Image (tube, rainbow, N blue to C red):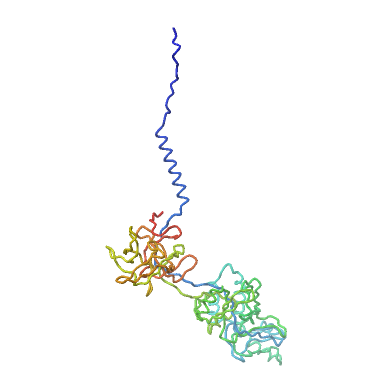
Length: 465
C-alpha cells in the first residue's frame, strides 16, 4: 500500500566553484588596473646635472651699406677696363678706355701683339677667387654661380687689357688722331664693376622685402661692351667705414644696443671684427640693427649680402633642462631668529605653540634653509604657518611669520625624495638653462634632479621610470 504522506524533493547540487579561475580573474583585473593607472599617471624621469655652456651666437644674412658713387660714361664706344675690381685707385689713375670707332679690336687681331700670358700674381688672384667660391658655395643659392662666372670673366679680361694699352697707343699714332679715349678716376676709392640699385641705401631705408632677394638684380658691367654717353660704367667705394644691416627682434636689438660694440665673425673667410651698434624700427614694426666697421671694407666690397655670426656671451655653468625648473613660495624670516638645535644640531626656529591645557610653550622646530641674504633666510613652509610666532634665541623678542618670497629652483632626488634646491639662472634658451654652480643652497655637478618638475610635489618619494 502506497505511502501518500511521502514527498520527493529533488537534490540540488552546490555550484562547482573553480578556485583557479577566480584567482586568474583577480590577477587579470589587477593587471588591467595597473596598466590603466600607468598610462594615466605622469611618470617621473630623472636627469643628471652636468657642466656645460649655451652659446647665444646667432647667424644672420646682412645687407652691406657703403659710401658708393656711380660713375657714368662721358663718351660713346667700346669700353675696356684696366683697374682691377676690388682694388684701390688714386685720383687720376687710369680706370678704363673708350674705343669710339671699334678699330682697336680689329687692330689687335691684325697686328703682332705677341703672347699675352698671365703673371704669377695674376694666376694667384684667379686661384684665390676660385678657392674662395668653392669653399662657401651653397647649393640652395645657385644664382651665386652666375655671379662667380661674371667675376672670373671680368678678372681675366681686365688682366689681359694691360696688353691692349700698347695697341691703343699704336692705333692712335697710326691714325694721327685719338680714336681711343683714356678715362681716369675722379677721386680715390675702391673700383667695383657692378650696379644693383642698393648704392644709396641707408639704415632708415630698410624694409623686410630687401632681405628676401627675390627681386634683387646685380648688373655686372662687362668688358668690351658698347656704352652710350651717360651710361653707368663703374662705381667707387670711397670710404673705409661701412656697415652691415641685419633684421632682428626688439629684444635682441635692445641687448645689442646695451653692448654698444659687438664682435662679428664673417662666414666668408672666418675673420672677426668689432662693429658699432645702431638700430632702427620702420613704420611696419620691423627692427633692424646696423653694425659699423672701420676696416675690412675692401675684402667685401663686391658683396651686397654677407653672412655673419654675432659672437655674444658664452655662459658656462650647470646645464639643466627648462622643464626641470619651478618657482616655489617660502617664508622669509630675519636671520637672528634661526638657530641650531635638536639632537642632530639642525637649523630651525623656536616656535610658540600651545599645550593641551592651553598654556603657551616654546618648541624647537627643524626647518630647511633654501636661500639666504645678508639679513634674512628663506624657510620651508611645510611646518610653519602664516601667523605663527617665533622667538629670538636668548631673548623675549617675537616675530610673527607673514613675509613670503619666491625662489626659482629644481627638485633634487639624490636622497630618494623631491628636495627643492634653489638655482640662479645665468642664461637660457628655448630648451636649456645654464645655472650657477657650487652655490651654498643650490646644485652641484652630477646631482640627480627631476626632469619635469610638474610631475612631483615637495618631499614626494620618487620611484623613477
